Image (cartoon, rainbow, N blue to C red; front, top):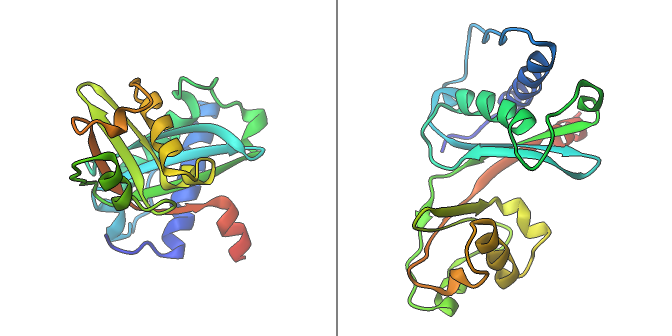
Length: 194
């Protein structure tokens, strides 16, 4: 994964805010600048998260690197603002109070384990995002979720529930477990850099 420069981070955050604003104003999408960083064209997994008054306001992303980073940020910003079924669509009145965060994912790596203790030893709290899947049920928590659920068993139990499975599904060796890391940055980070 190529490093993302501070300038690129600022640009991606500005892009995410602009596409949400354009949707609210019902304007056509903004055209991209003449020169785009090569990193923007790399296929990356990416999540866009919206926060309002410190709470979650929307979060949508793609785990697998199937789209260019610039496309993933553009699409996921609109989806987080208007298609996250847990929330009503973002309004123009609240947009000034919303903070945008972007998480760029490494490629997920499957974990092999014989028992729950073996699995727990491989997961790094605060570092790993985790994907659980079994059949059609699949869910992920970004590494940022460790802040709310610092214990491995609580983290994995809530992730099982998010995937629509039993809270102990993570103990079942039939459950596929993958981990990834993220490079996360937000508008709050950018303001602190200034």
